[in-house]
Amino acid sequence: MGTTHDFLERCDKLAVMGGTFDPIHYGHLAVAEVVMHKFLPRRVLFIPGGQPPHKPDLTVSDGEHRYRMTMSAVCETPGFDVSRMEIDRNGPSYTVETISALREICPPNAEIFFIIGADALMEILSWESAEKLLTLCQFIAVHRPGYEIEETYVENLRKNYGAVIHVLEGPRLEISGTEIRKNFAEGKPVGGLMPAVAENYARTHGLFSTQGTELSPARFEKVKSQLELRLSPRRFKHTLGTIIEAEKLARHYGADVNKAKWAALLHDCAKEFSADKKHTLCKLWCVPTDEIMLSHIDITHSLLGAESAKRQYFVTDEEILQAISRHTMGHAGMSLLDKIIMLAYFIEP
Ligand code: ATP
Ligand code: MG
Image (tube, rainbow, N blue to C red):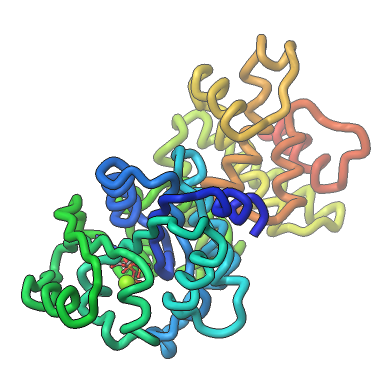
């Protein structure tokens, strides 16, 4: 558990949000922000579950992916962190075990709050060792559109189980993992529902859709029409010309024709970003630059193009990305595909 664990040893006030986080979304994040401001914990700890015991028949994304996707979404927020404790545990995750483990790690009288949405709260009595869990920590019950927190139910948990439950009005965002996975599968946008970094993580790793990242003719046509919208007519025409030349050269020299077409398709995808956007993205995407490149920012478009192809058009093939990144400045020891793309780019009519 590394540093998360180290810090918890000194953490006297902790809020925990458990969930599948498949994916993490603004519903979770907005609730966590409100908890941070109202309850003032030292940390809000997101704990993606192992295979969830209450969803045995559903396929859930791999734990490592859910952990990394969650980390990408929260790591820039002060006080937010993610724990691996449930994904590293074998078998299903029971919240009662997780809170017991946290009690062992945190100082003896640490205040621990478990954040729970209305839907999950209404089912809590069916959870493993619910009676024990209800006295192990305090609960922050959060309203969620479509689910009622019944006052009599909460009173029952308080009176008959000794539970401490704070009911939080919360931001009431109508967002769910289920809806987002559906949107992914149907090719609908999810930008307003979850952070872009988490969305990019999901797309780059092909989560939630079977036809997400492959280099098929259908996806080629889809990306081509996206570029037709995003590029100027002149740049798009150049792109089409480069595809034709790259295909011819690949056939002639026995290179992978499909890879050549994809590299040609995306080689200039960052070319028309504004200068400011190029400067900003070089920093944000950690593109290595030097003084000359910074004073002639346009030449970074090949390196930014490779990053954009990976992060925004979900191309994972390293040979394609390398060919895109080398098409303007060249490189020592260029591959056949690198040379084909650079040449196609120069000779297209
Ligand atoms: P799924 O639809 O796959 O169940 P989900 O959106 O419910 O996804 P989970 O990871 O299951 O997300 O939820 C983790 C916790 O966050 C639960 O306690 C859940 O009730 C709560 N939660 C999720 N979305 C919201 C929301 N929009 N508002 C308030 N609480 C939420
Ligand atoms: Mg849920």
